[in-house]
Length: 118
Image 1: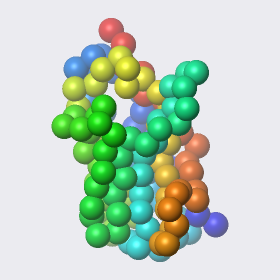
Image 2: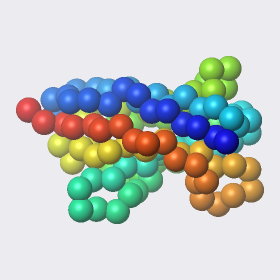
Image 3: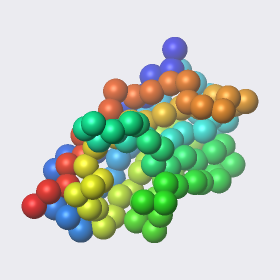
Image 4: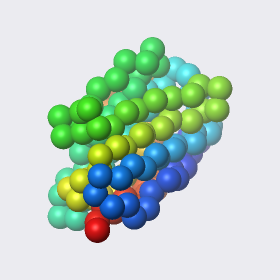
């Protein structure tokens, strides 16, 4: 059973930075795609960023140039570095796992709250 554990959320002022971590277990991490989604109150869950097994990345337009996704296969951990945070980035952030040959995530973390406010 794949388990994903997020950490690193919190309260930050506009313009600040946070780094989210997602530790995975129960999976062959190196061949899986890892991602970050977010869901704000009253809105649907949306893709923020994803990184594939070969290191290819994609980002939502709203975070390009501000957020960076990365992975450390030796630690079975994915990261999301968030800079220049805006109030509209406030949401619950979820780590996702997509097994090979799947087109959408098949495992999710429980989520971590990110609040951007002065």
